[in-house]
Length: 33
Image (tube, rainbow, N blue to C red; front, side, top):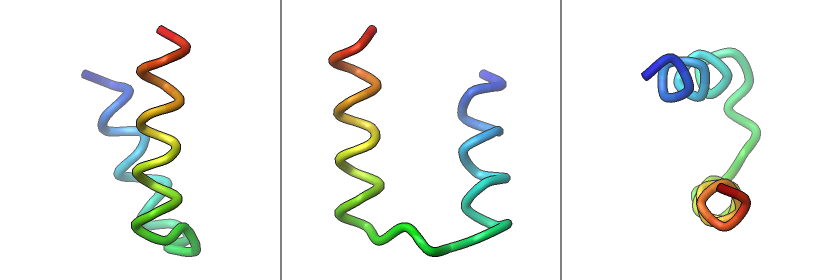
C-alpha cells in the first residue's frame, strides 16, 4: 500500500517521467518481484 502512495508522491514532486517510462518502471518492478 505505501509503495503506491510513494509513487504518487514522487510523480507529484517531479513529473519528469513520461507515460512510457512509468509503464516500464511498473513492468520492471513486477519482474523483479
